[in-house]
Amino acid sequence: MPRPSFACVHCGHSAPKRLGRCPACGEWNCFEPDAAPPSDPAGWGVARERARPLAEVPQSAEERFSSGSLELDRVLGGGFVRGSAVLVGGDPGVGKSTLLLQAANRVAEAGGTVLYLTGEESAAQVAMRGRRVGARSPRLLVATGTSLPGFAAEVAAHGPDLVVVDSIQTVAVPEVPSIPGSLAQVRECAARLTAAAKTGRHALALIGHVTKEGSVAGPRTLEHLVDAVLYLEGDRVQDYRLLRGVKNRFGSTGEVGIFEMTAGGLADVGNPSRYFLSRTANALPGVAVTPALVGTRTILVDVQALTARSGFGTPARRATGVDATRLAVLLAVLEKRAGLHVSGEDVFVATAGGVRLEEPSADLAVALAVASAFLDRPFPRDTAVAGEIGLGGEIRPCGPMEGRVEEAARLGFRRILVPAPGPRAGSGIEVVPVATVDEALERLEPRRTE
Image 1 (cartoon, one colour):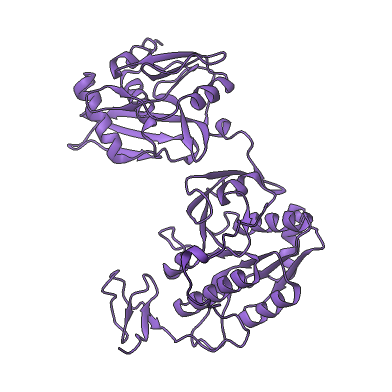
Image 2: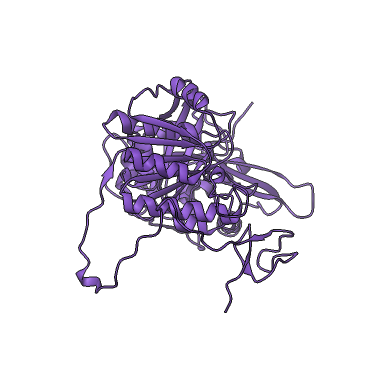
């Protein structure tokens, strides 16, 4: 069968001829020539090993080195791995280049050789940002250009421990007949860079542009080529950034790194619970605090809710940071099991700081926040809650509770509601077991009076 010569730039669907509309993703005018792999004058080909029994393959330990940032190391699974490729995506201006330039400088200060390859900025621009973030190590080398063979020569000449490419959409192979950033160029350059990292035993970090939908621009095969995919999220007008791992062959994908944008670059947030808590002087209706497991650590998060009488036939349901389907189930439980008539109310639920609560232990906090807003009865400021809610209104266990109790006590909470029977009382905090939603609702304070 002849090799297809065209491919969709959005989904990578191949076809033997140019199509007006992609049959896979439905986009129009998105097919570009999918050139055959060209010759490899730079020597960055894919190494091949002869087939042998799996049992005879020697076991090699992961050779890691730290990025110098506790939060970045957490998301990476312990640091950069030699021979691996990491793709970092995010909105323009969110801080991708700053994050990796700081990591590159820390690796260089620790004695490693780092090569920062940029095709978007001049060396003077990189140096300007480097002075702002304090990147002055003599072992941090900068090279500019857009030619992959030129970058290959720099890598061969210096033998770095870490290579940063900013960005993969600007690099091109002269033999591929398309512009930089096209499907063929991105795929070919990423494949060669990744193969070179595996044979040269250096870590590779690629910066990737994102589309309007928030995914890394280019073919989906780009994410399959690399070993880890990280997304840096945050609003450019706010100070905090979240680094999420959506793929990691050498660590967990549930970890979240939290950074603060300062005048000197991105700084690790040592106590993330304080970032996700919006404590006020007085207790407000519609707010409940839950200790949530984010990766391997426990973070206290504010769950906020607002209810208002709907002015239309179908009440609005909006959820930010919690699953919208789960919110609908919890509203039905409050209606049926707790007697709260929220079916005619517009309900809005959000988490502070933009964190996503994906585990069921947040059910009790969501239900209590909605009930507090609906009844206009605040929940005590010194009380945290954690528990999964069943369809019968019962509160079910939700994994280990000891770490949640300890984090709540460390942040100054005096009590915590947990599923019955609950763990032992923590040091300096009262552990209150509750069996049903009705029991939890009894903890609401009286209605506010003006």
